[in-house]
Length: 242
Ligand code: PGA
Image 1: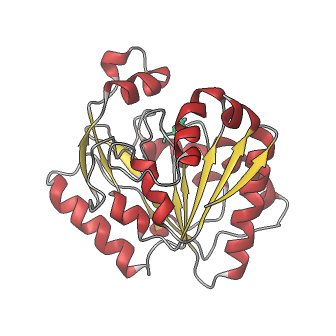
Image 2: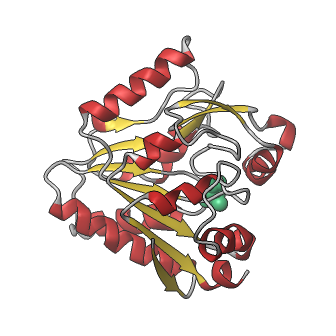
């Protein structure tokens, strides 16, 4: 894992933006794996700016998002569909038929998981997956204890995850209890991974990931990234010293 140390959130976002633009320019039909949450917001803002300055086009880009809440409709502002459209897709020239976000409203959720996997295979797999890390070490919504062999699946969210995401809802009781997420093996199938880590609250998780090279355990999902050949971590000072 390559670690790039930056000053703060802005520098992390700038660097992540340059990193992705370089891939988009180099690849024929880039397939991006995307994440939601606070961490990649600055990245999306910068990509939109670059698009507005005609420095990048997303015409040939396909995307696959990591996860979505179960039971939350696409047009609900709490959904990750809404987040992605609001913060990124509606501002760029991406074709919406190349955009993939799992549906947490599907009648048959298991079938939805299988179809999502198939769509990724048909697209030639994710070229570069953007990831954040949870305070408990989760990647996507793969909570501690999730099998390293998991594919896209339905998960029960941990209390710590629901608490961390309660800021987007009126109260913690409104935070969904389940989500659909790419599995750990699905994430590991991506050809390259870009992990973004910012803020002191992520300090413990980042230290655990970086300090003990030998620890690879399902109790700390992000630890699997040590087995991936192409991982770049961009981490800011607060996360590195938090
Ligand atoms: P955050 O979430 O970017 O909102 O901190 C990251 C995560 O939980 O994976």
